[in-house]
Structure formats: C-alpha cells, structure tokens
Amino acid sequence: KDASGKPRRVLLKLSGEAFGGGSVGIDPHVIRRIAEEIVPAVKQGVQVAIVVGGGNFFRGAELQQAGIDRSRGDYMGMLGTVMNCLALQDFLEQEGQATRVQSAIQMTQVAEPYIPLKAIRHLEKGRVVIFGAGAGMPYFSTDTVSIQRSLEIHCDEVLMGKNGVDGVYTADPRKNADARMFTQLSYTRALVDNLAVMDASALSMARDNNQVIRVFGLEEAGNVTRALLGESIGTRVSS
Ligand code: UDP
Image (cartoon, rainbow, N blue to C red):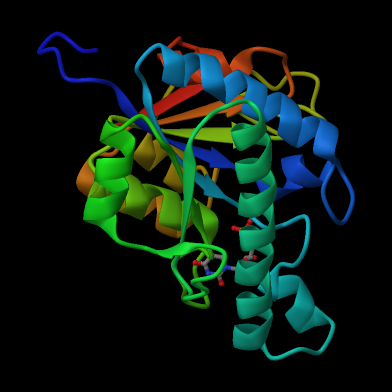
C-alpha cells in the first residue's frame, strides 16, 4: 500500500522472448518460475495485471520479410500472445492463484473480452488479469499496449521484464564492455538517444501521460517478485 493506504497496482509486461526460452514455442520451466514469483507479491496485496508479448511465436515485421502481408502477420503475432497468456494462466492456477485472461480479439471460449472496468474488479478481488492479443490492432506492439492498459486501469507503474538485459544501458552491454546501466532515465533521453528500451510509440505515450516505467531483467531469480513489490531494481524511466 502507498501512503494514502491505496493498494499498489502494477502492469507487468513479460516479453514473449522470455516465454520461449530462446526458441519458438514455450519453455514451461521459465513460465512456471515466473508464475511462482508472481504469487508471493499478490499474497502481499499487490494488484497485478500482465501484458504478455508474442515474439516467441511470430512478429508481424519478420513475417513481412518472409512475404506475408504485414497486417495479417501482425494478427498472427497477436494470436501468439494469447497462447502465452493461456500458458501463464495455467501455471498461475496450478499455484492456486485465481486468474482471468482478457483478449483484445474476441475468442470467448478461452478468454473474456477486454473490459477495463471488469479488469479492475478482478484486480480488486485479488485475481491476476492477463491481457492477450495486444491492442487487437496491427502496427502496435505489446510494449505500447502495456502503457495504454496501465493508463486505462490506473496502475502505479509499468514493469517491463526483459530477457538478456537487466536494465537500460548507455550502449549494448553484450557488445560494449564500457556500457553502463542507468538507474534513472528520462523519457526524452531514451527517445533522443534511441536507447533500446522499448519502441518509440510506447515511450512517447508514457512521456505524454507521465507513466512511470521500470525496466528490469527477468532471468535473475526473485526479480519478478522484487519488481512487483516495488524494489529499485533495473532502470526507472520517468520525466
Ligand atoms: N502485435 C500487433 N498489435 C498489438 C500487439 C502485438 O500487431 O497490439 C503483433 C506484432 O506483429 C508483434 C507481435 O504481435 O510483433 C508480437 O508482439 P511483440 O513483438 O510486442 O512481443 P514481444 O516482443 O514482447 O515478445
């Protein structure tokens, strides 16, 4: 809870890349571990909404390179995110955690439609809400959707869980030994310096609406719980 006694509500973005464990499809061990790390934070009263990416299945831009119409490829990408949502839902339910999946593309047998007020009710009841199918619109990314959903359901922070990095660096730490991690970063610096945090649409939407973002690494054990509980790990992006 914050100073006013309002429970902490966060939007956790999980990249599809993490779900795939580096290849196409899902790595159940990774998803189970992430689920196990979410539950303790919910038990402590944190309201957790999640946006799941789909890069472990399809990315529209890559399918376009392979000769598929961009919008159709984007829809394929969105459908991939729903499979990730169902996998995460299953591991959370196995941990005894109540969940709901809400999809931006209607598929009522497997997911509720996206209804923001209903999502808020679920959160208030201690359920984890998992948003699938991105925005339901081609040419968007799940990063941008994370900011939008966070704004719409009034989250305190967007927690961007990344694979392969533990924050935002001055340069690519895998290629440059001198690269240093920012603990604080402004939206404008991230945009102007083109720092590889998330896409520019997501960053500019966050800047326009003052949505605080924390970028952190998913791989280190315990990091998901730490981020959900509000620990200062990774990089905080704000004005
Ligand atoms: N996508 C889309 N609209 C959205 C969200 C996603 O068209 O609102 C498509 C897009 O093709 C994207 C793919 O779904 O490449 C998978 O999502 P994303 O790349 O954001 O997943 P991540 O990189 O986080 O795994």
